[in-house]
Length: 329
Image: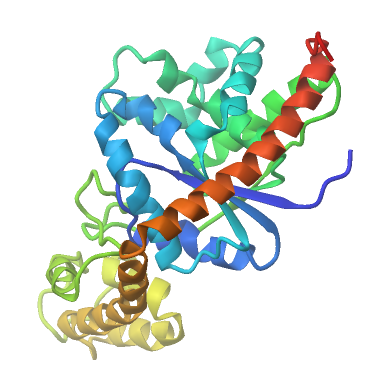
């Protein structure tokens, strides 16, 4: 089986995207779309695993996330953007995969265990426990070879590889084992290892200059640095992590200035805040452009979904043939 490199990436539709998404995945997607055939999934079905009782949150945010994609200049001519729930073949393949995936393998998935603990689940819902199977179907249905993920998502990719390998061994080698491309992580304003909407430590891509200014005021710095000229430790300072993300060329100077006490925390914050303003200004302008053109967004999503439907249908024809369940030809 021969296939060109194909990238699959996407987001759960539970809220607007923030700088953590930009550093962790969106920047990477911009590079990847120049090199590979790229598919971007609006994962509304997966969002139901934690928001099944809040469907309006998902429907309201689908357009918001699509706007975020377009505002950072993901190009629909290079990246196929599509809606997960409109590809019924994903659900069908999920069912077939679930026939040979054990409950124990899902329960022992490190990401599932961590998420369940964070959400306080004492008894996991079937959809939540089984979403790695659905993710494997997402990857397999479009025969993705490369999956950009955060480090915490690597167990899902390994699980998907095992599922695809098991299918190919059982039936025929018609599916592709995906490989992970691990991205960066941006810590939250509070110093938490991950920026997150639910933790209240995020700067959103559509944040106004005033909002960014206000949010950056509470960003964590070295707690041991009491006075302006005290030497600091950049390795435990959130602001320095933001310099690494948004002002990489200035990092060595900032690092030395912090350690020697020749640059104060306030000045350091001002510099990185200015860099974030510079990054977000064209993103806000692009977002405003598309907000005024909802028909263009609908057309982009419809075209991307239609393109993916054709690939999904072709894959499922091969899957059914391999399983011997293509009864009527």
